[in-house]
Length: 377
Image 1 (cartoon, helix red, strand yellow):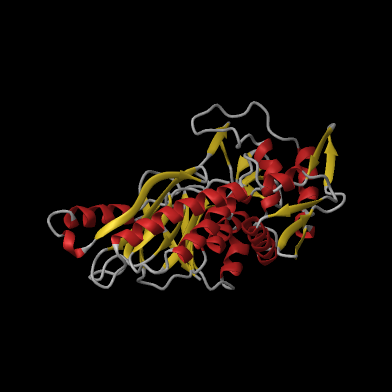
Image 2: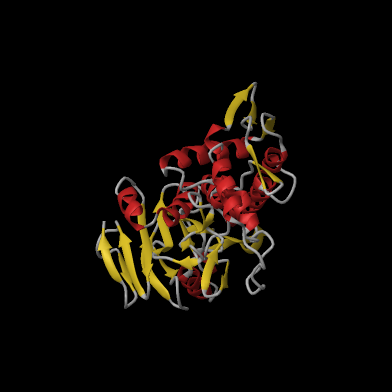
């Protein structure tokens, strides 16, 4: 599932720094990497500071940049749900069938099952059929809304089907990796058979960020970003080590949150990334696994709920999955869950016109736009 973009004042700060660096101070070093390269159905940027005394050379940065792009292509080929991959092999398999995975898809499968258990099923990649039934795999912003939505009979069947995801057996044998689709992992409703399928869009970009983080660990300054939705951030400069990062408001064209970050990973999700409206009700691509409907929808109407979540932590993959899970939990459950986490979290509850920010971030480590109440966790 696509993730909502985080507004990157980080990128603006970087642009200012680059402009001054190119103004006759090349001996200090230079930014290397790439911008706007297309991976995982979005754009990716890599920025590494190199060539200054005490930093890797520009040639080394260029080599790592090329390695990063090769890695991202490999990971796309491992995790795609639209092109041939180990994941599509699993999705096409019959119940009871064993499918060979590669190391990346095996790692993501394993982590996904761990996070499924940790979040009580609120992170669940088996929402594939629901995303498809609501038309989001073929939907682009601005397209007309689908003429029909899934029936309650379909949604009930898909809820039953999702119960098979934690039963997927994963094992390694002789240096090769396998997944066994559970026997019986299919349902038939209204004459259509649905077999268990997965989509790791809610964790795949985060996993890729983690792998890039490992690849670039010799560089102290810079960042890697999937269009702001999943990021691995290093330090900014010797003079000012932190980046100033702004998160887009869930409603309106402004930034609601600004925080100083360094040496961390982060992800954000929101219901205003890819969505359509029918009779004033917003249907987002983020699915609540417990209802198999878009988050914050009940009886064809929007309800009070979490409309955006941002998580900072050591692993971008965990942050990626946790933001999706938080949005599906609802406020009361999310509040208790955040208290168990080591990660830093902000999420916004929308209740009518009222927006409330819940966070475990230390007071003074961030600023909010006017109009938001704050609940410290």
